[in-house]
Length: 305
Image 1 (cartoon, rainbow, N blue to C red):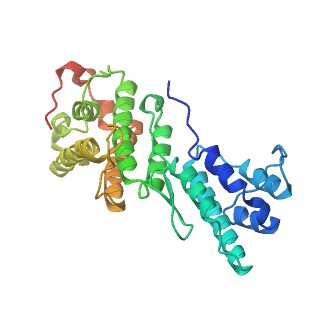
Image 2 (cartoon, rainbow, N blue to C red; image 1 turned 135 degrees about the horizontal axis):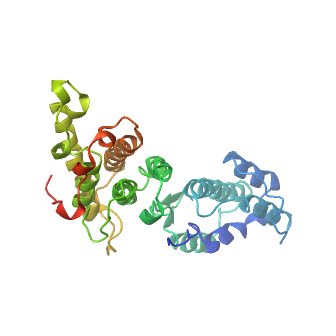
């Protein structure tokens, strides 16, 4: 059973900002929350002064385990802190006190956020694109996860690469389960990819010959070449994850990764997964018409492509 999602921004960081709200006009507090499309939650438990209660009413509408919500909250917090700093300077002060900024930095650093000298928040790893493979037993869940990774992958490249690999694994296992074929949890991903493609007659070696010489796009030489390349590409995502993605307890974060690497890995995984899921659902797909004697046997597969 997958572990419950944890909050992506701690109460320590949230309370560090909340504690400063007494020095800000209520209208400004509401404005910045509503600029990011948050609304007050009337069921919020009152506590503190009017401004802190107002802050709490908006914070109560946040799903602190949701990447999009937390990304928007961080923009709210950044705006609030910068407004406080400007108000202080406008009134002859020196901006937010140095000890306050130091406390804020320490609080946010615990969640992987950096507060710079201009009071801008930078997030290297607030959100983690974690895919619970064992929980994805339906195509709709995989499609939803693919969309989530597409949305946030550019911001978290190594997380995206790790999630892309997990989605390929989840899709392969789903195919085998739907075909009522055994799934060996000890099997490496290249073998799992090949087995799933063979189960749907999407591996070059498993494509049936054209019947009575009739041309078919499903067994054309061009399709065989594309499927072979796609199989290699899916395996390449797994190899990329082994070197750069999340999931291996590194002592240091990988360097050199950027949004283009994330989009490349996620795009490759999406193409492979969507082809597999579309073929699994297609009532006219060749695998449905094939004889049961051609159904692949898990133990007979090799890892070659």
